[in-house]
Length: 305
Image 1 (cartoon, rainbow, N blue to C red):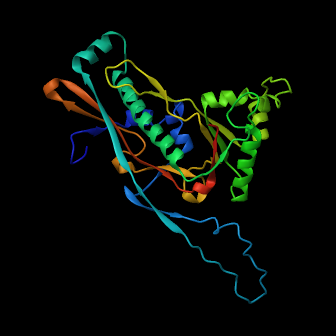
Image 2 (image 1 turned 90 degrees about the vertical axis):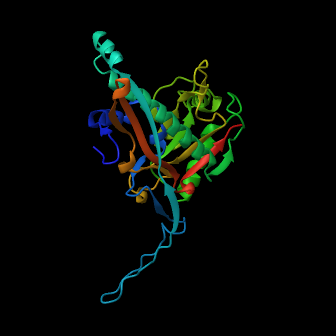
Image 3 (image 1 turned 60 degrees about the horizontal axis):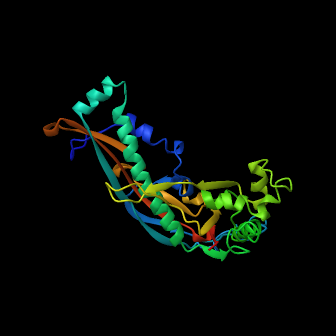
């Protein structure tokens, strides 16, 4: 119980909500979560001239060891809190129990979480599109069946990343309909037994030179409240990305992180409190995050429009 609110942390709901890998949202796959100790602060940014140097020297007995220094820049971050509340009136809880619904509170919390994840995913997509990644046009233009050459476009991006020192954990990040179009290009179908028969995901991974494919299927209701639902794509169909995806400490590499400040909500926190004047339990789901691109050299953007 906080000194500043009557809301109580709900560990059971919080644990359930943080099983974020069980849904089709991909924001935390693309920008993995890293906890931070402060809500605002700075993190170090190393230039591409600060690693992979041939700096070691042969050492003679009794002599000094070779040394090198490290120069780095700094980048600001600021975790913002996002939150939603939902009501569970006593009458509804009783009715749910009578109808055999055993966890109405959990169902409401998960609905609130999905709305928060929509916001997070939209911000991840936005920051990816606005990032200063090296951008190139896909060979052969649009992702048409005959003309497009996505294999060489992705291979060239992989080689450029390797030239920048990024060799592992490379991912193709692509919207689902664009991925399906890619599978149906003559270029890609030619590697499937020569006749377009899909055999194994590893075949295309090997051909492209990436370690994984992150397919982005998510949509959201972009209509105003009370209007007919309009399911809009979150991810662009005009471009896709190839980059090093890594989580944890910044030293692990990768192009970005979802920075999460736990005392202010972290990735997902659930709280409950009582609103007695309306005879309802109130469920609150919140998080405190900043979607940050920490190294624009670690990803490439390929445009198809």
